[in-house]
Amino acid sequence: MSKKLKKELAFFLNDRGRRSYNGLCRKCQHECKQSFRAVIIDCPHYLSKRAKRRTPINEL
Image (cartoon, rainbow, N blue to C red; front, side, top):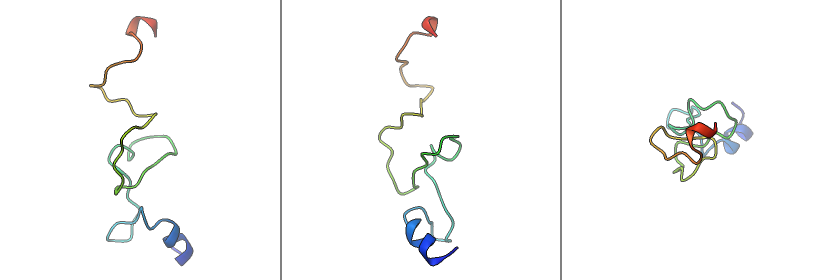
């Protein structure tokens, strides 16, 4: 990895120098990956199985 890229990705690099993403973002298919250092408050693409649905199931 070049020095410039390391500076850009410094927030994502773990102690081994590898890119690490948040636990919720690891398996996500969308491009909006967040760092393992970040605390995710709200993700528009993530919906927990325990979360309350916005629309009833019958309307889907």
